[in-house]
Amino acid sequence: MRSVSFFLLAVIAIAQEPFRPTIPKVWDEEALRTFELPLATPEASPRHISAERYYAIPEQEVFQSYPLTMPGKTEEEYLAWLREQEPRRIDTAGLRTKEEWIGAGRAVFAWPGGIIPSSRGATTIVIRQKGKIEYGNLNCAGCHTRVLDDGMEIPGAQVDAARLWRDATPPTQQSLAAFVKGRGTGLDAPWLTPDPNAIPAELEIFARLRTRVPGIAARFHSSLWSPANTPSLIGVRDMKYLDRTGHARHRDIGDLMRYAALNFGGGGMSATSSFGAHAGRIGSTLRRFSDSHLYALALYVYSLEPPKNPNPFDATAARGEKIFAREGCAGCHPAPLYTNNKLTPAPGFRVPEEHRRLYDVMPVSVGTDPWLAMKTKRGTGYYKVPSLRGVWYRGPFEHNGSVLTLEDWFDPARLRDDYVPTGWLGPEPTRAVKGHEFGLKLNSNEKKALIAFLRTL
Ligand code: HEC
Ligand code: HEC
Image 1: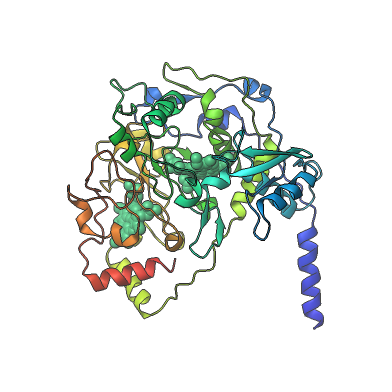
Image 2: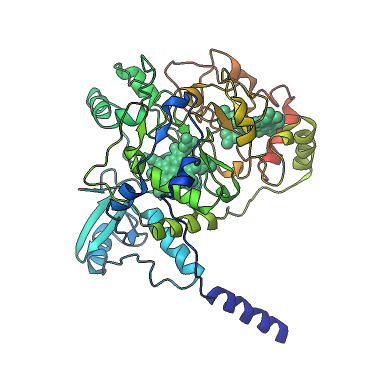
């Protein structure tokens, strides 16, 4: 009994221990210079603004934000309650424990990229002034939270369609025009002539490219023609490279902060970066998170844990684990992370000699579609080996999210030109989802066992 209470006291003491972090400088020019891998066309690689110009950008204020609805309250009751709330500014100066820092990071994760006039397209409600209800558009949480079928929310996990595209209506000629006007530039590769990423004029093709698939966002610096699958952030602290193309290195917490700074909102700081001859710009409304807000955000992301796995490691899964070993999966997806944290060249990419020294490059390609890796502003020529942890609560799979389930990923029919992708469709009504042929030849029993094993990870 005594030892138990001593143990508890020790735990409480640790939880309350003052936490005095050394916060890395986000815009450290030397760290930034080696932060990103060069693009597949090296001359097109981004150049970032100087530290002096960066720190002259005003800081973003962050307040506590609120969900759009509250269970058990009618809309009227909820809005009335919100009007009573004092604005809660998130200030890191008074934070004492690590838990408090993580709490502040959670608020930054929920802070929107922009304040919008109505609830349409909103992901959150913000109170910056008592009695005034404002709506916010996309925040980190909006793209990096999954809601399971039973309603359980998993912060950090790959987004589901219902949340990201709540107000989605099928594209119209008008929305296509608006898209061209507003978003076009983040999705281009101006060094390619003609640029294959140009937004199509035909509504039918546009509609297919914009299919509302869970987790698929033609995020700026990818392409409407080859969007990037939204990753789960749970476990990202162990990943050496960020983005499907391994575009950014993750050497320490400072790099995660740099990633968040460059990727926040509709382009974030990366709108200030120059690509080749194309100069970036610093808009007058641009704000940067303070280094300490970004530090809190990164601590929060590192603290994300997976939900409890309901899939038992039974006899079938045990058989699956043997098949996993026999088929050589562990060569690239070894335990415990189920990734070797390496990069594989996309078809057609010639690995420059110095990359073998600088990065973790495997000599083999898995042969998946090269577009994202070769023709976009995040395209390094590589695809990283993704971790297989948490595949039971995520999907779609493959860098474009072309297939919805693990069953589809191991279905050899996906290699055929008449295949209808179950995830992101692509420009044509049918399309082969090529490459990564591992496990495709297994018989149906073996495949079931392999998938049962993967679902335990
Ligand atoms: C519009 C949706 C969207 C928003 C908002 C968003 N992300 Fe992401 N995030 C993505 C997509 C899509 C990718 C994948 C990009 C790629 O692979 O090229 C990504 C990738 C990442 C990665 C790389 C992880 C990995 O394993 O490769 C991190 C870290 C990340 N986001 C953190 C954040 C943080 C922090 C915020 C808020 C500051 C944020 N994201 C806001 C969609 C979003
Ligand atoms: C030579 C390295 C290599 C081998 C061997 C390998 N994989 Fe992969 N795996 C990859 C790469 C690279 C990707 C990502 C490809 C892409 O996104 O274009 C991937 C993707 C996956 C995905 C989709 C994950 C996601 O988040 O999109 C699953 C599931 C998977 N592999 C399972 C397996 C299994 C099971 C085996 C063995 C039958 C195997 N892999 C063998 C490199 C490998």
